[in-house]
Image 1 (cartoon, one colour):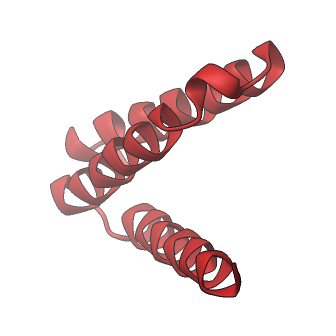
Image 2 (image 1 turned 135 degrees about the vertical axis):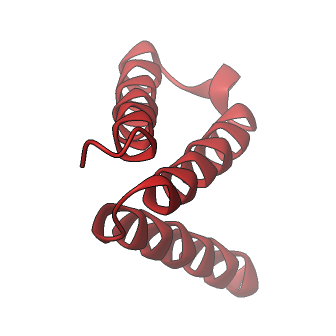
Length: 79
C-alpha cells in the first residue's frame, strides 16, 4: 500500500514538472511538452472515469481542455 502511494506521488511530481517546463519553454517545444501532459492526463483519467461523479468528470475535462488549449497556443508560437 505504501509503495502505491509513493508511485502516485512520483507520477504527480513528474506530470507537474512537465507542466511547469512546458509553460516556461517558449515555442513548439513547450507545446509538445504540454501535449505530452494532455496524453498522460487522458491515460490516467481513463482508468477511473467510470467511477467519477459528474462534477469530477467536468473538472478533469476542463483541466485537460485548458492544458490542451495552452499546448496549441504554445505550439503555434503565440506564447
